[in-house]
Amino acid sequence: MMGAGKTTIGRALARKLGLVFADADKELVTRTGVAVATIFEIEGEAGFRKRESTLLVELAAGENAVIATGGGVVLDPENRKVMRERGTVVYLRARLESLWERTRHDTSRPLLATPDPKATLATLLEQREPLYMECAHLVVDTGPQSPSALATRLAATLRQHAGSA
Ligand SMILES: Nc1ncnc2c1ncn2[C@@H]1O[C@H](COP(=O)(O)OP(=O)(O)OP(=O)(O)O)[C@@H](O)[C@H]1O
Ligand SMILES: O=C(O)C1=C[C@@H](O)[C@@H](O)[C@H](O)C1
Ligand SMILES: [Mg+2]
Image (cartoon, rainbow, N blue to C red; front, top):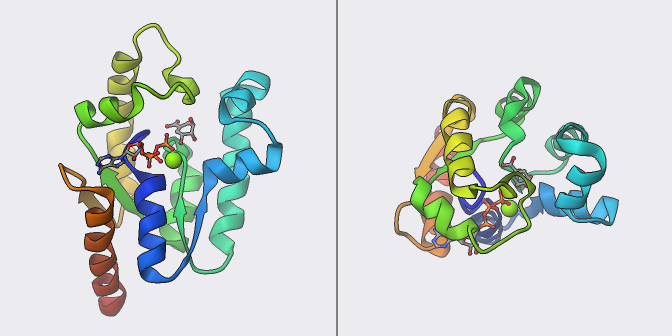
C-alpha cells in the first residue's frame, strides 16, 4: 500500500543483498519526465496503469533485482501473475494508522487527492488487502520496526527462502 515502505525498505534491502534496486514509480517519472500525479492528470489512472504494467513486464524480465512496485500494481490480474511467476513477492503489511501517518503530509499521491484522504486510504486498503495476500509469497508485518531493521529481517528471511527453494 501507499506508505507501506516499499521504496525505503526496498532500497535498504537491495543494499543488504547486493542487488540492483528499481523503483517502478521513479522509473516512470524518469521515463516520462513528469510526476506520477501529472501522468494521472494527462492520461488518467488507466493510462498510468498501462505504463505500469508494461514496465513491470520489462523489469521482471531483467536481471535479478529488488523491485519496489507501485501500490496499485496488484489491481491487474496479469500483473499479479507476472510477479508471482517471476519473483518472490513480499507484502509489506501495515495498519491503516501507520499508512496514514506516513502519507498524510505528502501530496504527491494522486489517489489521495480527495476531500477525505484518510477514508480513501481505508477503502483502498480494504479493497486491496485480499489482492496483496493473494499475490504475496511472504508477508512482513511492518509494526513499529524501522525500515533498516525490517530490511535486515527481510534479507534473512529471503536468504532462507532461497535456500529452501
Ligand atoms: N517502518 C517504517 N517506520 C517508520 N517510517 C517508515 C517506515 N516505512 C516507511 N516509512 C516512512 O514512510 C514514508 C513512506 O515510505 P515509502 O515512500 O517507502 O512508501 P511506499 O510504500 O514506497 O509508498 P508509495 O506506494 O506511495 O510509493 C517515508 O517517509 C518513509 O521514510
Ligand atoms: O497505490 C496506488 O495505486 C499508487 C501508489 C503509488 O506507488 C503510485 O504508483 C501511484 O500513486 C498509485
Ligand atoms: Mg514508493
